[in-house]
Image (cartoon, rainbow, N blue to C red):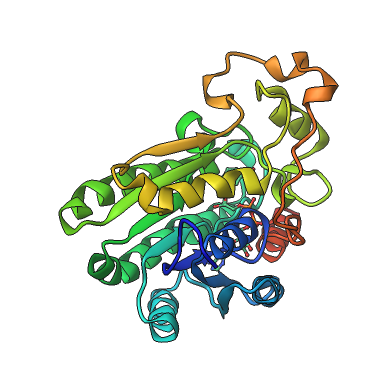
Length: 294
Ligand SMILES: NC(=O)c1ccc[n+]([C@@H]2O[C@H](COP(=O)([O-])OP(=O)(O)OC[C@H]3O[C@@H](n4cnc5c(N)ncnc54)[C@H](O)[C@@H]3O)[C@@H](O)[C@H]2O)c1
């Protein structure tokens, strides 16, 4: 396929569900060959099949990429299959529980250290030698929570703050090798995490997540994927060390402005990527952490 990522090879971690599904499909539409990475329980195969059915190029890779050996094997598999690596998207992550800090389960904290921080570090470390060869780039999932903090899941904001600072350091360190690194900081997005039925938020927290967004709604996975595609493309050739917030204005908001938005403007736009796995994310990680709270 022709597009902004023509002839590029990309790894998308957590590519089987939620925002990662949208990134995988968007990148394939833009011409990239995509390695869709996820845990055994993720619908990675389905996403790969959907990309192939559209005429795109993709393979799946099932592994826990927070583990050093698995991260290295994942990068090797991408290079073996497609000959090189141009783009690493560090999108994998977890949001396993909500609770005030005095009751926050240690297991959920450890899950996030592993799945948010180790995964980003391991994949970055393994990918850098290959990205130096192609003068490639990294785009990582940060969060508005990494900038502002996240009440009711304070360690989550901490893990995202790590990613912001870590990848900004990588951006400066690797600039002399022609490697860029940027961060996308989503606000509340329409995935499993931000719905009380599929994620750890209760009804009150779910309501507050959109009240605090001046645009009065969640973003869509596709709206986030569009920004990933720009940052990963050569159009962003002078952009490095940046955090692009895709948050409907939440980081510049001073209160519950979302309440003032008329219902006609609160509807999320319909995209073209036919996302089928946007609410299938992270369930195994979340269930285990929630079980440990009981
Ligand atoms: N949904 C939001 O509102 C929101 C807001 C800000 C930031 N983000 C970030 O966007 C990213 C995607 O979130 P999402 O809402 O699409 O969630 P999601 O659960 O649908 O996607 C995350 C995926 O990563 C996979 N994953 C987690 N740990 C892994 C590991 N060690 N190895 C391989 N795969 C692993 C999960 O299984 C899952 O498929 C996350 O990094 C998240 O922190 C999301």
